[in-house]
Amino acid sequence: MAGYQHYPSPTSSYAESFKRMVVREFEQGTLNKKQLNRKYGLRGHCTILKWCRKYGKLHYPYRNGTIGRPMKDPQKQRIKELENELENERLKVLAWEKLYEVIKREDGIDLLKKDAAKQFPNLPRSIPER
Image (cartoon, rainbow, N blue to C red; front, side, top):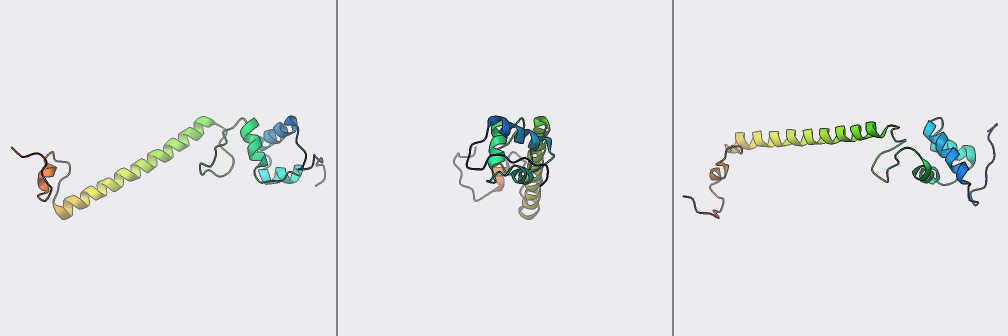
């Protein structure tokens, strides 16, 4: 590893300026965490992540299922999250529509009619019909 400087051993504490430099290098995207660990002799798989959460300019969530470097633009990240939620809701609606079709076809019950409850003869009546 020619050209790499040697930095403090893992048992010593690191200067804040050093931590900020590593975070800045990570956020620029030139090296990943594993490469930075090797370059600077850092130990521990989450050292850089902890520093990024403290000193970084990007959003580093705690265990939300994302893998890898976060998006640089928080608005784009939020848009992507909303698009995923929208797709999940679209799939739910599709499932309910299929369920509605099956109930209507197999049982002859139209759930969208106002008097749908009258189509269920076995339901107990809490309010007497007029």
